[in-house]
Amino acid sequence: MLDVCLLGTGGMMPLPYRWLTSLMVRCEGSHLLIDCGEGTQIAIKEKGWTFKPIDIICITHYHADHISGLPGILLTMGNAERTEPLTIIGPRGLERVVSALRMIAPELPFPIRFIELTEAVQNISLPPYEITAFRVNHNIVCYGYTIELKRAGRFQADRAKEQGIPLKFWNPLQKGNTVTDGEAVYTPDMVMGPARKGIKVTYTTDTRPVPVIAEQAKDADLFICEGMYGEPDKAEKAKEHKHMTYYEAACLAKAAQPKEMWLTHFSPAMNYPEDFVGVARKVFPNTHVAKDGRSVELRFEEE
Image (cartoon, rainbow, N blue to C red; front, side, top):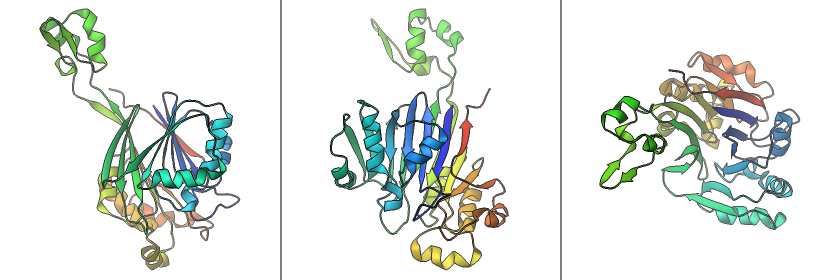
């Protein structure tokens, strides 16, 4: 199961009713955060979740509305007596940027591991998550992220028996381990069925529509996409500032066919984002205008 909460849905500046951009997912006691705009700590408290189990923070890019809350959340995690390592992922220059922000949070009781993104598409395995970072098209280097929970096939006891594999090796093989017994070598593919459908969430913001977004969001359980502008007359402004309109986001969703799409990262000038959702739903019907705190529990499909 994957818990997903869109903590903040605002772009550019926080508002009394809309925090800046941040997404949190939870799985097996681990928390992953994408972006950390101003107000993220308050949004986490409002949700009733906690800071200490955050193991991974993914940063899309280095504009303030996506990273300005980071020093405070690091301090709060430190004050919670966290000692486990924290992994931060982001575009090239990540360690330099975070080190500069840490001038106001210099002493932390836990180490930070940095993973700097250098490829157009980069895969990172940090169990239980499989993370794909993909470069999008903003006015500075910016990445979207796909978060997946993979699901192995079913253990097939009949095959294990047919091949004479001792019972004591079944459990290691089921966990994906290769077992050597004298000259015999047993591999998981000898006893496991084909991989089953996992869980997939794709998140992108601050970008023009580019094909890689639809490729990444293909058949996702949830596609979270920026909708900076809902108004039809803002198309040129979206192009100028390298953002997207509702209509453009919906066209990506139509190409990708996720189960549902949430729009986020709204312009502060758009007081009522839901007023324009009809534009998107004409293209992709299962579109939702997200509000801060919108959540869903994504579960593996039953077979």
